[in-house]
Image (cartoon, rainbow, N blue to C red):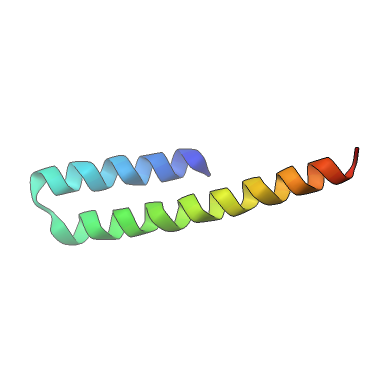
Length: 53
């Protein structure tokens, strides 16, 4: 999941450099959503991993 976030951030940066505003904004918003999903899943796995001990 983190890999997809990084891919979309890089895509947004490249699109912004070349002047594709709509594509850059779309890729940046997808990267932001994936990042927050990744953080939530990471925290859930930390909590569930601690409970089993």
